[in-house]
Every structure is written in C-alpha cells, then in structure tokens.
Amino acid sequence: MGEKLVLTGNYAVAYAAKLARVDIVAAYPITPQTTIVEKIAELIESGEMDAIMINVESEHSALAATFGAAVAGARVLTATSSHGLMYMHEYLHWTSRARIPVVLALVTRTLAPGWNIWSSHDDFYGQRDTGWILSFALDNQEVLDTTIQAFKISEDPRVYLPVLVALDAFILSHTSMPVELPDEKQVAEWLGPRRQGYVVDGRELLAIGNLTWPEDTEEMVMDLWRAMEESYNVIKEVDREYGKLFGRSYGGLIQCINCSDAKYLAVAMGAWSGDLMEAVNMLREEGYSIGVLRVRFYRPFPHRDIWEYARGVKGLIVYDRAISFGAWGQLYTDTVAGLYQYTTKLPIISNVIAGVGGVNVTAEEFYELTKNFIEKIEGGEEPPRITWYHRR
Image (cartoon, rainbow, N blue to C red):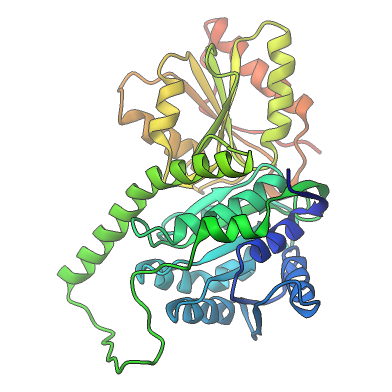
C-alpha cells in the first residue's frame, strides 16, 4: 500500500506528474485548470519535484513550448480547459503528426458563448480527430493512475503518440477524495527512461523542410492511424502491468459493471458514470437486467470491447454530455458505427443528451431515464433515437 492523501482531481494530476518525474511543465492559467500548475509550481519550489516550469503568454504557447521540450527529449506535461484547449488546437495536430510523446491534462469545461465554467464534454470531443489518444477518468484515483499510465503509453515505441487525460470540471477538479500514491521509485523504474522515435536537441546540424508531397503526407497520416490502432493493445498491456505492480487495474479501454448477464446496457463516459452506476444498482434491485458500460478511452474507440458485451443485448442507451450539431451525441455516433462493423442487425440504441452546460444529472434522473427506455422496449414500443433531457 502506498501513501494516501486527500486530493482534488487537479492535485492528483500534479502528483502524477511528480511521480512520473516530469522534466518540463508549460501551462497558462485558466479556470478550472489553474490549480494543477499552481500545485506543480509549489512542488517544484519546495524541492519535492525536480522539474522546470515555463511561464508562457498563452495556451498556444504552452503547448508549443511543451512540444519543443518534448522534441528535445524531455518528459513533459501541460494542462488546460475549454477555450484554452481551442487555442492550443493547432499544435495538437503538430504534436501528433510529429509522433512526439506528450501528456496533456484537460479539465473539461463548457465552450462559450455564454460564458460558462461548468463541465460539458464539447471541448474534449473537439479533439476527436487530432490524432491524440483520448481518455476520460471517473474519479480522482483514476485521474492519478491514468496520468501515470499515459506516459507509459505515449512513450511506447509501438505508439509514440500524445495522450490527453480528461477530468470533469469541479465534479473532480475541485472535489477532494482519498487517493493512494504508488511509490515514486517503483513508478520511475516501471516507466524507465523517456523514449521517443527521434530527438532534435541541437547537437547535430539538421535541416527540416516544411513542405511535403501529397503522397508523403498521406503516408504520414496512414502511419499515425496504424499507431493509434496499435495503441489499443498497448493500453490494455499497460493497465494490466499497472494492476500487478500497484494493485489497481481498470479493465483497459472500457469498464463494464453487471454486464455479463445484462439484457440492456447504459453507456457513458466521465464522472457522471458514477451516478449512472448508482441508478443501475437501483434498477437491478428491482429486477431489471442492465449493466453500465463506461468508456475509459474514446480514442482509439473500443468498438471491439463494446461488441463483446453488446452482442446479445436488446438495447443500449447512450448518455452524451455534448452534441454534434446537425447529428447526434458523439459517443452515440461512434457506438453505432462501431457495432455496425460486426452486425447489420443492431440492437435498439437510443441517445440521451443531458448535462450540457454543467447541468447536474442525478442518480434518480438516470434511474427514471433508463427505466423508461427499458420499459418502452419491453412494452413493444420504439424509444426515440435521440432525446434531450432538460429541466429547470
């Protein structure tokens, strides 16, 4: 057993950076992320963490500085939220296409207008096609563990892709929970020295052109896609290794609870999955055969794992905390597309959009929404394929 501290989700990220022995941190303050880098600065100032903090003038510069340090061979971390991530967006593409290991902590926050500091997942989903591995934590212990694992995944030679670790604003970022810290020497030994495909550190003369032929660009994109596909196996391996060493394993890309005998599945991602789990426990006590399928990694999308549990069910209800305008929720869209790879006779899949803008969704509300979905199907009715749940 390691040392136990009561930490906010943001402090869990900071301690994960310390345990991973990060060399360089560059970030710009934004609510509700700011306390991540404030805590890291405190750990550096007190001598508990041997790292350099780079103060920059914007979030774009934060990722640019992080990227530059990583290219030079440093283990790095940055963090942001909402519009800060939008400002970084250009450099997310540069980082992934350069195949440089980087870890970014995202405290999810609603995009403006209106000006809103509460958690939605629209900033997270906006990075869907950047070539980053995308993960989402349930609680503060998982925030710490996933951030440490992110360095191992990112620096694996089969991958060499950046990793984003998301946590919900305030629900996790500013809420304190008991968190067990693994031994720092054990973590350092497990992670090993930083690895990356190449280093540009000024020791050798190097000329880089900024223009590629279409065929070369296409090959780069194909290689990135192959690395993302390979990361599926690496994520599972890293989770298993971490579980053996430190006693906590999360099931890889998904976590499925009460799924083995389930006729229905409720699918979600992020901290509100905990409320959904409470709702499903209530439903099971009443005799409803339902499980919770929590998506931990959104990219690569775990369609193979979802299919293993979904192949025999009558229906899935997918909860999204964001919407793709003119279409459906992003998690719903990928779930439908993923299952379609295995069968054209899909179970009934319904999409509920809720919690947008930081609106709280309680376990009791999840209970009513999920129960209504099941009872409609059992009663021979077709539930709506998309529903907005909104209350005042």
